[in-house]
Image (cartoon, rainbow, N blue to C red; front, side, top):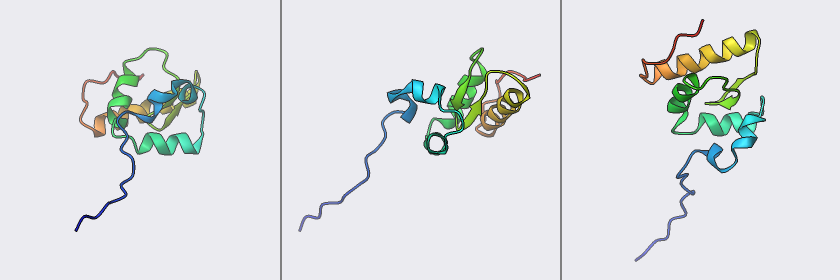
Amino acid sequence: MTVILELPPVLTASPCVADPDRWADGGNDPTLKALCRGCPRRWLCAKEALHTPGIEGLVAGVHVPKEGRTRMFALRQLQSLAAYAGYADQPTIP
């Protein structure tokens, strides 16, 4: 007897790949944050963001504003995510 299983679709790429502008302008959108936080590349994304000068937008589930104290806080959150995943070569945030 054969049984057909209904499996959810598998994401072959990060959700941000299909529409990167949505993440750049996403701000604090909870739907986008949830997609980021469920992405298998989240930790690597945090590491790559720390090596990208002037990064802003929604990265690894963290909203990174263009400037100000909240930007520094967001960059430290990304640094923490990258360190948690074992990426020890991230730059130091002042």
